[in-house]
Length: 119
Image (cartoon, rainbow, N blue to C red; front, side, top):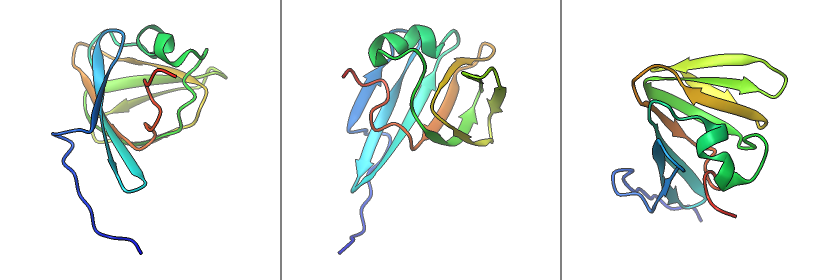
């Protein structure tokens, strides 16, 4: 039987630092995992997470909302999209991404169970 549960993202179960330029705080409640990623100015997946993931592209399937800043995502086929504060997003596997501008990009993301986690 399912039960009610809660846990504050301000006291995450785990914080995963990127190689540089940010981190992701991760909370798991039951079988649901949510992350709050802080992607500082200068962050780029291929520089900051690729060494941790060990894959040529990000293979995460991300869904969530951007609450600050902006991030551009480029799919392996060359398609690009910029996500800005207030945007709800879905990003399929097979992409690179980077922050836009001088402000940190903050994303709440459900596709983080294995994200930026050494294998």
